[in-house]
Length: 448
Image (tube, rainbow, N blue to C red; front, side, top):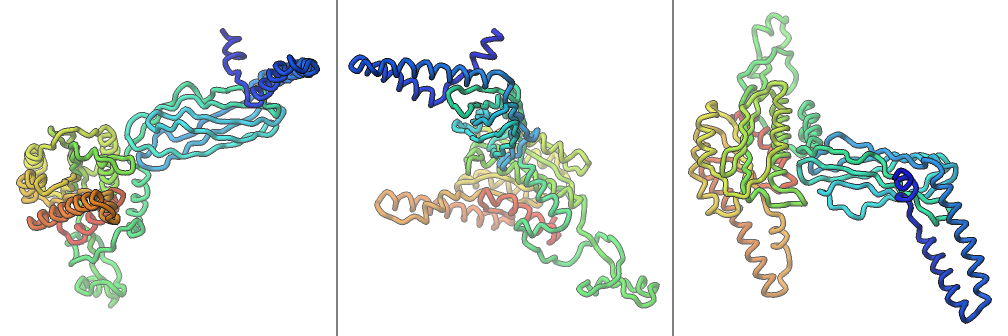
Protein backbone atom coordinates (compact mmCIF):
# COMPACT_ATOMS: atom_id res chain seq x y z
CA UNK A 1 0.00 0.00 0.00
CA UNK A 2 2.89 2.38 0.75
CA UNK A 3 4.35 1.82 -2.71
CA UNK A 4 1.01 2.45 -4.41
CA UNK A 5 0.36 5.58 -2.34
CA UNK A 6 3.80 7.01 -3.08
CA UNK A 7 4.46 6.01 -6.70
CA UNK A 8 1.09 5.19 -8.33
CA UNK A 9 -1.66 7.43 -6.88
CA UNK A 10 0.22 10.71 -7.47
CA UNK A 11 0.86 9.75 -11.13
CA UNK A 12 -0.90 11.68 -13.91
CA UNK A 13 -0.13 12.22 -17.55
CA UNK A 14 0.14 15.52 -19.36
CA UNK A 15 -1.55 16.65 -22.55
CA UNK A 16 1.67 16.09 -24.52
CA UNK A 17 1.61 12.42 -23.45
CA UNK A 18 -1.83 11.84 -24.96
CA UNK A 19 -0.99 13.76 -28.14
CA UNK A 20 2.19 11.73 -28.71
CA UNK A 21 0.39 8.48 -27.88
CA UNK A 22 -2.40 9.30 -30.34
CA UNK A 23 0.15 10.08 -33.08
CA UNK A 24 1.84 6.68 -32.52
CA UNK A 25 -1.49 4.86 -32.73
CA UNK A 26 -2.29 6.69 -35.97
CA UNK A 27 1.10 5.69 -37.41
CA UNK A 28 0.51 2.03 -36.57
CA UNK A 29 -2.91 2.15 -38.22
CA UNK A 30 -1.55 3.82 -41.36
CA UNK A 31 1.26 1.24 -41.56
CA UNK A 32 -1.27 -1.34 -42.82
CA UNK A 33 -1.42 0.58 -46.10
CA UNK A 34 2.09 2.02 -46.01
CA UNK A 35 4.41 -0.60 -44.42
CA UNK A 36 7.40 1.78 -44.23
CA UNK A 37 5.52 3.66 -41.43
CA UNK A 38 5.71 0.60 -39.21
CA UNK A 39 9.42 1.04 -38.56
CA UNK A 40 8.93 4.73 -37.80
CA UNK A 41 6.10 3.93 -35.41
CA UNK A 42 8.12 1.20 -33.69
CA UNK A 43 11.18 3.37 -33.10
CA UNK A 44 8.91 6.22 -32.10
CA UNK A 45 7.20 4.02 -29.52
CA UNK A 46 10.54 2.97 -28.03
CA UNK A 47 11.68 6.60 -27.87
CA UNK A 48 8.36 7.66 -26.37
CA UNK A 49 8.42 4.98 -23.64
CA UNK A 50 12.02 5.91 -22.81
CA UNK A 51 11.10 9.57 -22.37
CA UNK A 52 8.13 8.67 -20.18
CA UNK A 53 10.32 6.48 -17.94
CA UNK A 54 12.98 9.18 -17.67
CA UNK A 55 10.38 11.83 -16.90
CA UNK A 56 8.81 9.58 -14.27
CA UNK A 57 12.16 8.86 -12.60
CA UNK A 58 13.27 12.49 -12.34
CA UNK A 59 9.89 13.55 -10.93
CA UNK A 60 9.47 10.72 -8.41
CA UNK A 61 13.09 10.30 -7.32
CA UNK A 62 12.82 12.92 -4.56
CA UNK A 63 10.24 14.70 -2.41
CA UNK A 64 9.99 17.53 -4.91
CA UNK A 65 7.52 20.24 -3.88
CA UNK A 66 6.61 21.56 -0.45
CA UNK A 67 3.44 23.66 -0.05
CA UNK A 68 2.30 25.54 3.04
CA UNK A 69 -0.97 27.46 3.39
CA UNK A 70 -0.88 30.58 5.57
CA UNK A 71 -3.99 32.43 6.72
CA UNK A 72 -5.58 33.93 9.81
CA UNK A 73 -7.21 31.72 12.43
CA UNK A 74 -10.48 33.53 11.82
CA UNK A 75 -12.08 35.31 8.88
CA UNK A 76 -14.11 38.51 8.79
CA UNK A 77 -17.59 38.06 7.35
CA UNK A 78 -18.31 40.14 4.26
CA UNK A 79 -14.68 41.27 3.86
CA UNK A 80 -11.76 40.19 1.70
CA UNK A 81 -9.55 37.82 3.72
CA UNK A 82 -6.01 37.13 2.52
CA UNK A 83 -4.70 33.58 2.04
CA UNK A 84 -1.13 32.71 1.01
CA UNK A 85 0.41 29.50 -0.29
CA UNK A 86 4.20 29.19 0.04
CA UNK A 87 5.70 26.83 -2.56
CA UNK A 88 9.27 25.52 -2.38
CA UNK A 89 10.93 23.36 -5.03
CA UNK A 90 13.52 20.71 -4.14
CA UNK A 91 14.20 19.74 -7.75
CA UNK A 92 17.49 20.49 -9.48
CA UNK A 93 15.65 21.53 -12.65
CA UNK A 94 12.83 24.01 -13.42
CA UNK A 95 9.27 22.76 -12.88
CA UNK A 96 5.88 23.96 -14.06
CA UNK A 97 3.18 23.93 -11.39
CA UNK A 98 -0.60 24.03 -11.21
CA UNK A 99 -2.04 24.71 -7.76
CA UNK A 100 -5.58 23.74 -6.75
CA UNK A 101 -6.58 24.63 -3.20
CA UNK A 102 -9.53 22.63 -1.84
CA UNK A 103 -11.62 25.57 -0.58
CA UNK A 104 -14.52 25.25 1.87
CA UNK A 105 -17.83 24.23 0.31
CA UNK A 106 -19.44 27.52 1.37
CA UNK A 107 -17.56 29.38 -1.36
CA UNK A 108 -18.78 27.05 -4.15
CA UNK A 109 -15.66 27.94 -6.11
CA UNK A 110 -14.98 24.99 -8.39
CA UNK A 111 -12.62 26.63 -10.87
CA UNK A 112 -9.79 27.60 -8.51
CA UNK A 113 -6.47 27.25 -10.37
CA UNK A 114 -3.12 29.02 -10.05
CA UNK A 115 -0.20 28.49 -12.44
CA UNK A 116 3.48 29.32 -12.03
CA UNK A 117 7.00 28.20 -12.82
CA UNK A 118 9.72 27.56 -10.22
CA UNK A 119 13.40 27.56 -10.98
CA UNK A 120 16.03 25.23 -9.56
CA UNK A 121 15.37 25.07 -5.81
CA UNK A 122 13.13 28.12 -6.15
CA UNK A 123 10.46 29.40 -3.78
CA UNK A 124 7.45 31.62 -4.36
CA UNK A 125 4.36 32.78 -2.44
CA UNK A 126 0.95 32.87 -4.08
CA UNK A 127 -1.68 35.25 -2.75
CA UNK A 128 -5.45 35.24 -3.17
CA UNK A 129 -8.45 36.56 -1.26
CA UNK A 130 -11.71 35.02 -0.10
CA UNK A 131 -14.92 36.82 0.82
CA UNK A 132 -17.21 34.74 3.05
CA UNK A 133 -20.85 35.77 3.26
CA UNK A 134 -22.00 33.46 6.06
CA UNK A 135 -20.87 33.10 9.64
CA UNK A 136 -19.76 29.67 10.82
CA UNK A 137 -16.91 27.18 10.51
CA UNK A 138 -15.14 26.87 7.16
CA UNK A 139 -12.99 23.79 6.48
CA UNK A 140 -10.02 23.87 4.10
CA UNK A 141 -8.69 20.57 2.80
CA UNK A 142 -5.56 19.70 0.81
CA UNK A 143 -3.44 21.99 -1.32
CA UNK A 144 -2.98 20.01 -4.54
CA UNK A 145 0.17 20.84 -6.49
CA UNK A 146 0.63 19.27 -9.93
CA UNK A 147 4.27 19.39 -11.07
CA UNK A 148 5.77 18.57 -14.44
CA UNK A 149 9.21 18.89 -15.96
CA UNK A 150 10.15 20.53 -19.24
CA UNK A 151 9.27 17.22 -20.99
CA UNK A 152 5.65 17.57 -19.88
CA UNK A 153 4.79 13.88 -20.29
CA UNK A 154 4.36 12.86 -16.65
CA UNK A 155 2.70 14.89 -13.89
CA UNK A 156 3.18 14.30 -10.18
CA UNK A 157 0.61 15.40 -7.65
CA UNK A 158 1.59 16.64 -4.19
CA UNK A 159 -1.05 16.94 -1.47
CA UNK A 160 0.13 19.31 1.23
CA UNK A 161 -1.11 21.50 4.10
CA UNK A 162 -2.76 18.65 6.03
CA UNK A 163 -6.05 16.85 5.62
CA UNK A 164 -8.22 19.73 6.90
CA UNK A 165 -7.94 23.13 8.55
CA UNK A 166 -10.94 24.84 10.13
CA UNK A 167 -11.33 28.61 10.49
CA UNK A 168 -14.17 30.50 12.11
CA UNK A 169 -15.92 33.25 10.17
CA UNK A 170 -16.92 35.93 12.67
CA UNK A 171 -18.88 39.16 12.21
CA UNK A 172 -16.92 41.82 10.36
CA UNK A 173 -14.04 42.67 12.70
CA UNK A 174 -12.13 44.36 9.85
CA UNK A 175 -14.66 47.20 9.87
CA UNK A 176 -14.52 47.08 13.67
CA UNK A 177 -10.80 47.86 13.63
CA UNK A 178 -11.24 50.73 11.16
CA UNK A 179 -13.95 52.41 13.22
CA UNK A 180 -12.07 51.70 16.43
CA UNK A 181 -9.02 53.64 15.24
CA UNK A 182 -11.15 56.51 14.00
CA UNK A 183 -13.21 56.64 17.19
CA UNK A 184 -10.07 56.74 19.35
CA UNK A 185 -8.73 59.66 17.30
CA UNK A 186 -12.14 61.38 16.97
CA UNK A 187 -11.75 61.06 13.21
CA UNK A 188 -14.98 59.28 12.33
CA UNK A 189 -15.67 61.85 9.63
CA UNK A 190 -13.19 60.03 7.39
CA UNK A 191 -15.48 56.99 7.42
CA UNK A 192 -18.42 59.05 6.20
CA UNK A 193 -19.61 60.27 9.59
CA UNK A 194 -20.96 63.80 9.54
CA UNK A 195 -19.72 66.51 11.85
CA UNK A 196 -22.54 67.32 14.26
CA UNK A 197 -22.96 70.77 15.77
CA UNK A 198 -23.44 70.46 19.48
CA UNK A 199 -26.45 72.15 21.06
CA UNK A 200 -25.36 73.61 24.40
CA UNK A 201 -22.86 71.58 26.37
CA UNK A 202 -22.82 68.67 28.75
CA UNK A 203 -22.89 69.24 32.49
CA UNK A 204 -20.24 66.57 33.08
CA UNK A 205 -17.16 68.51 34.18
CA UNK A 206 -13.79 67.26 32.92
CA UNK A 207 -11.07 69.85 33.61
CA UNK A 208 -10.08 73.50 33.78
CA UNK A 209 -7.87 74.62 30.91
CA UNK A 210 -6.47 77.80 29.41
CA UNK A 211 -8.75 79.74 27.12
CA UNK A 212 -8.07 79.48 23.38
CA UNK A 213 -9.86 81.17 20.52
CA UNK A 214 -13.11 79.38 19.85
CA UNK A 215 -13.88 78.31 23.43
CA UNK A 216 -17.28 79.23 24.81
CA UNK A 217 -16.80 82.43 26.82
CA UNK A 218 -19.82 81.44 28.94
CA UNK A 219 -17.62 78.69 30.45
CA UNK A 220 -15.03 81.15 31.82
CA UNK A 221 -13.95 80.26 35.35
CA UNK A 222 -13.26 83.60 37.02
CA UNK A 223 -11.86 82.17 40.24
CA UNK A 224 -9.29 80.10 38.33
CA UNK A 225 -8.55 83.14 36.15
CA UNK A 226 -7.82 85.24 39.26
CA UNK A 227 -5.45 82.58 40.64
CA UNK A 228 -3.59 82.52 37.29
CA UNK A 229 -2.92 86.25 37.45
CA UNK A 230 -5.28 87.24 34.65
CA UNK A 231 -4.74 84.28 32.29
CA UNK A 232 -8.23 83.36 31.15
CA UNK A 233 -9.29 79.87 32.24
CA UNK A 234 -12.39 78.00 31.12
CA UNK A 235 -14.25 74.94 32.33
CA UNK A 236 -14.04 72.03 29.91
CA UNK A 237 -17.00 69.66 29.75
CA UNK A 238 -17.13 66.22 28.19
CA UNK A 239 -19.98 64.19 26.79
CA UNK A 240 -21.97 62.38 29.40
CA UNK A 241 -20.73 58.86 29.94
CA UNK A 242 -22.08 55.54 31.17
CA UNK A 243 -25.26 55.92 29.12
CA UNK A 244 -26.85 52.65 28.07
CA UNK A 245 -26.92 51.64 24.40
CA UNK A 246 -28.84 48.51 23.40
CA UNK A 247 -28.75 46.99 19.92
CA UNK A 248 -31.90 44.97 19.26
CA UNK A 249 -31.78 42.60 16.27
CA UNK A 250 -34.88 41.18 14.62
CA UNK A 251 -34.18 37.60 13.46
CA UNK A 252 -37.50 37.15 11.64
CA UNK A 253 -37.94 35.77 8.14
CA UNK A 254 -37.62 39.14 6.39
CA UNK A 255 -34.06 39.49 7.70
CA UNK A 256 -33.02 36.53 5.55
CA UNK A 257 -33.36 38.67 2.42
CA UNK A 258 -30.01 38.58 0.55
CA UNK A 259 -28.00 41.53 -0.67
CA UNK A 260 -24.68 40.96 -2.48
CA UNK A 261 -24.52 37.45 -1.08
CA UNK A 262 -25.06 38.41 2.57
CA UNK A 263 -28.36 38.38 4.43
CA UNK A 264 -29.76 41.51 6.06
CA UNK A 265 -29.21 39.81 9.40
CA UNK A 266 -25.46 39.66 8.74
CA UNK A 267 -25.40 43.35 7.80
CA UNK A 268 -27.25 44.14 11.05
CA UNK A 269 -24.79 42.02 13.03
CA UNK A 270 -21.79 43.77 11.48
CA UNK A 271 -23.28 47.19 12.23
CA UNK A 272 -24.08 46.11 15.80
CA UNK A 273 -20.49 45.03 16.36
CA UNK A 274 -19.11 48.38 15.18
CA UNK A 275 -21.68 50.46 17.08
CA UNK A 276 -20.97 48.50 20.26
CA UNK A 277 -17.26 49.16 19.97
CA UNK A 278 -17.71 52.87 19.26
CA UNK A 279 -20.08 53.17 22.25
CA UNK A 280 -17.59 51.45 24.55
CA UNK A 281 -14.79 53.74 23.35
CA UNK A 282 -17.06 56.70 24.13
CA UNK A 283 -17.35 55.32 27.70
CA UNK A 284 -20.97 54.27 27.26
CA UNK A 285 -22.43 50.92 28.27
CA UNK A 286 -23.39 48.58 25.44
CA UNK A 287 -25.87 45.71 25.51
CA UNK A 288 -27.53 43.33 23.08
CA UNK A 289 -30.98 41.82 22.51
CA UNK A 290 -32.01 39.33 19.81
CA UNK A 291 -35.53 38.09 19.17
CA UNK A 292 -37.81 36.38 16.67
CA UNK A 293 -41.01 34.51 17.47
CA UNK A 294 -39.31 33.86 20.83
CA UNK A 295 -36.80 35.88 22.79
CA UNK A 296 -33.17 35.14 22.00
CA UNK A 297 -30.07 36.45 23.72
CA UNK A 298 -30.04 39.26 26.27
CA UNK A 299 -26.76 40.86 27.34
CA UNK A 300 -27.15 43.60 29.95
CA UNK A 301 -25.47 46.87 29.05
CA UNK A 302 -21.99 47.11 30.52
CA UNK A 303 -18.55 48.45 29.69
CA UNK A 304 -16.37 45.88 31.45
CA UNK A 305 -13.22 44.75 29.62
CA UNK A 306 -14.72 41.46 28.41
CA UNK A 307 -17.98 42.96 27.10
CA UNK A 308 -16.75 43.27 23.51
CA UNK A 309 -15.67 39.63 23.28
CA UNK A 310 -18.97 38.55 24.84
CA UNK A 311 -20.92 40.52 22.22
CA UNK A 312 -18.77 39.09 19.42
CA UNK A 313 -19.30 35.47 20.52
CA UNK A 314 -23.02 36.04 20.95
CA UNK A 315 -23.41 37.56 17.49
CA UNK A 316 -21.41 34.70 15.94
CA UNK A 317 -24.12 32.18 16.87
CA UNK A 318 -27.16 34.14 15.67
CA UNK A 319 -29.25 32.62 12.89
CA UNK A 320 -32.38 33.79 11.09
CA UNK A 321 -35.65 32.24 12.22
CA UNK A 322 -38.12 31.79 9.38
CA UNK A 323 -41.06 33.04 11.46
CA UNK A 324 -42.77 36.33 12.20
CA UNK A 325 -41.12 38.31 15.03
CA UNK A 326 -43.09 38.76 18.25
CA UNK A 327 -42.79 42.42 19.25
CA UNK A 328 -45.06 41.90 22.24
CA UNK A 329 -42.44 39.66 23.84
CA UNK A 330 -39.77 42.20 22.97
CA UNK A 331 -41.75 44.95 24.72
CA UNK A 332 -42.19 42.75 27.80
CA UNK A 333 -38.43 42.12 27.92
CA UNK A 334 -37.56 45.79 27.53
CA UNK A 335 -40.14 46.74 30.16
CA UNK A 336 -38.84 44.31 32.78
CA UNK A 337 -35.11 44.04 32.07
CA UNK A 338 -34.12 47.54 30.85
CA UNK A 339 -35.22 49.79 33.68
CA UNK A 340 -32.92 52.77 32.98
CA UNK A 341 -33.65 55.12 30.09
CA UNK A 342 -31.48 53.93 27.20
CA UNK A 343 -30.86 54.34 23.50
CA UNK A 344 -32.40 51.30 21.81
CA UNK A 345 -31.30 50.73 18.22
CA UNK A 346 -33.78 48.34 16.58
CA UNK A 347 -32.54 46.60 13.42
CA UNK A 348 -35.60 45.37 11.54
CA UNK A 349 -37.13 45.37 8.08
CA UNK A 350 -40.69 46.44 7.28
CA UNK A 351 -41.84 45.93 3.72
CA UNK A 352 -45.29 47.52 4.02
CA UNK A 353 -47.22 50.00 6.14
CA UNK A 354 -49.64 47.28 7.19
CA UNK A 355 -46.71 45.20 8.45
CA UNK A 356 -45.54 48.16 10.52
CA UNK A 357 -48.99 48.93 11.92
CA UNK A 358 -49.28 45.43 13.38
CA UNK A 359 -46.19 46.10 15.47
CA UNK A 360 -46.59 49.85 15.98
CA UNK A 361 -48.36 49.69 19.38
CA UNK A 362 -45.43 47.80 20.89
CA UNK A 363 -42.86 50.04 19.20
CA UNK A 364 -44.61 53.13 20.56
CA UNK A 365 -44.73 51.59 24.03
CA UNK A 366 -40.97 51.04 23.96
CA UNK A 367 -40.43 54.62 22.76
CA UNK A 368 -42.34 56.05 25.76
CA UNK A 369 -39.63 54.99 28.21
CA UNK A 370 -36.56 54.92 25.99
CA UNK A 371 -35.00 56.75 23.07
CA UNK A 372 -35.84 54.40 20.19
CA UNK A 373 -34.04 54.38 16.85
CA UNK A 374 -35.57 52.12 14.19
CA UNK A 375 -33.16 51.04 11.44
CA UNK A 376 -34.55 49.30 8.38
CA UNK A 377 -33.37 48.64 4.86
CA UNK A 378 -33.93 50.17 1.46
CA UNK A 379 -34.40 47.70 -1.38
CA UNK A 380 -31.77 48.74 -3.93
CA UNK A 381 -33.04 46.31 -6.57
CA UNK A 382 -36.39 48.08 -6.55
CA UNK A 383 -34.62 51.39 -7.18
CA UNK A 384 -32.94 49.86 -10.20
CA UNK A 385 -36.32 48.74 -11.53
CA UNK A 386 -37.74 52.24 -11.19
CA UNK A 387 -34.80 53.65 -13.18
CA UNK A 388 -35.31 51.29 -16.13
CA UNK A 389 -36.95 52.49 -19.31
CA UNK A 390 -40.45 51.25 -20.09
CA UNK A 391 -40.44 49.23 -23.30
CA UNK A 392 -43.58 47.08 -22.97
CA UNK A 393 -46.55 46.37 -20.73
CA UNK A 394 -44.58 43.96 -18.56
CA UNK A 395 -41.81 46.47 -17.83
CA UNK A 396 -44.46 49.14 -17.09
CA UNK A 397 -46.12 46.79 -14.62
CA UNK A 398 -42.81 45.94 -12.92
CA UNK A 399 -41.85 49.60 -12.65
CA UNK A 400 -45.24 50.55 -11.19
CA UNK A 401 -45.03 47.84 -8.53
CA UNK A 402 -41.45 48.85 -7.67
CA UNK A 403 -42.41 52.51 -7.29
CA UNK A 404 -45.32 51.55 -5.10
CA UNK A 405 -43.10 49.47 -2.80
CA UNK A 406 -40.56 52.30 -2.58
CA UNK A 407 -43.38 54.66 -1.69
CA UNK A 408 -44.42 52.25 1.08
CA UNK A 409 -40.93 52.56 2.59
CA UNK A 410 -41.19 56.35 2.65
CA UNK A 411 -44.63 56.11 4.26
CA UNK A 412 -43.17 53.88 6.97
CA UNK A 413 -40.58 56.55 7.76
CA UNK A 414 -43.26 59.25 8.01
CA UNK A 415 -45.47 57.05 10.15
CA UNK A 416 -42.70 56.46 12.68
CA UNK A 417 -41.61 60.09 12.69
CA UNK A 418 -45.18 61.22 13.37
CA UNK A 419 -44.99 59.31 16.64
CA UNK A 420 -41.63 60.89 17.54
CA UNK A 421 -39.56 57.81 16.72
CA UNK A 422 -36.18 58.33 15.06
CA UNK A 423 -35.63 56.28 11.91
CA UNK A 424 -32.89 55.34 9.47
CA UNK A 425 -33.77 54.07 5.99
CA UNK A 426 -30.52 53.00 4.39
CA UNK A 427 -28.98 50.60 1.94
CA UNK A 428 -27.22 47.58 3.48
CA UNK A 429 -23.72 48.71 2.45
CA UNK A 430 -24.22 52.10 4.17
CA UNK A 431 -25.81 50.64 7.29
CA UNK A 432 -22.76 50.82 9.56
CA UNK A 433 -21.83 54.41 8.73
CA UNK A 434 -25.42 55.65 8.95
CA UNK A 435 -25.95 53.97 12.33
CA UNK A 436 -22.74 55.37 13.82
CA UNK A 437 -23.65 58.80 12.40
CA UNK A 438 -27.01 58.73 14.14
CA UNK A 439 -25.52 57.60 17.44
CA UNK A 440 -23.01 60.49 17.38
CA UNK A 441 -25.78 62.91 16.43
CA UNK A 442 -27.95 61.82 19.34
CA UNK A 443 -24.98 62.10 21.69
CA UNK A 444 -24.22 65.62 20.39
CA UNK A 445 -27.86 66.65 20.84
CA UNK A 446 -27.81 65.17 24.37
CA UNK A 447 -30.97 63.31 23.48
CA UNK A 448 -30.14 60.20 25.50
